[in-house]
Image 1: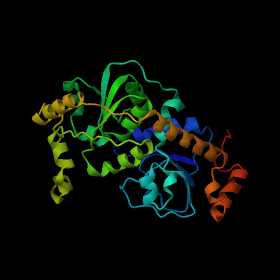
Image 2 (image 1 turned 135 degrees about the vertical axis):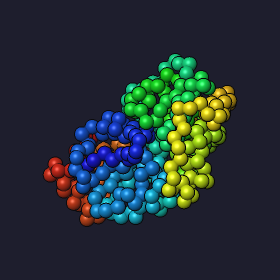
Image 3 (image 1 turned 120 degrees about the vertical axis):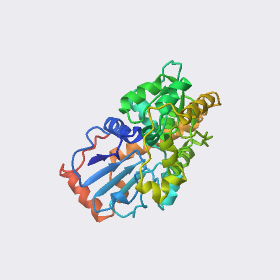
Length: 316
């Protein structure tokens, strides 16, 4: 069973967390067999995984980036990111236990340190399009680039006293570390829906703050013109590296934002979210195919497990 993670033109913190979290939680579970894939962190429950191979789901969500999947007996769903994903895919909302990233600090032994920094994490696309490193520096904030290796990002976050994040997993990790956070409304609308899916599992409603685009290119590509035929044929010039009025406005907005009241989910809500996922993880370790016990494909994979061909599970 392969450990699937999405990768685009740039690496992304949330998707790369899969490579740290799951080998720690499920040692010996993964191999290079492409006939089965494990879907963990990310908005990856969609039609890109169509086909006869086995799909084992542990906390993934639907993001709207591709069409909805057609669920059939090749899907083994232990839990999904939130109740909105569950309802949209026709599943019991009780399967919406939460994003597995909330287990990261405990799994990796990561603890909040005593630090004075205010960290800013843009969405990885904003980091690529914009001049947020300049804007953060001008605002006196610590820029944490979501395209960096996840180990570096986690260490940087742990040393901050406040996290401002346009990236969903920046907020999820901050919340799990009990670092107050401020949610930035994603500049691209399609990235917003998944926040509601996750936040329902910790009984929190993000109070989104708005930031302006930090470059002309970012303004063009994330605004109404970004979806027009004009910009499909013409690429906006890359104006990063020049201290433009847009960058100055973005820096001023960041500075003001750092003075606003942050959020944090309640301890009880976070504990419940983590506990329910740990229980689901134990069930997965003990019986990874339990949701397909009566289907032919389940019998096939159970036979492969007995023969030592499929993934190896270490019982708790």
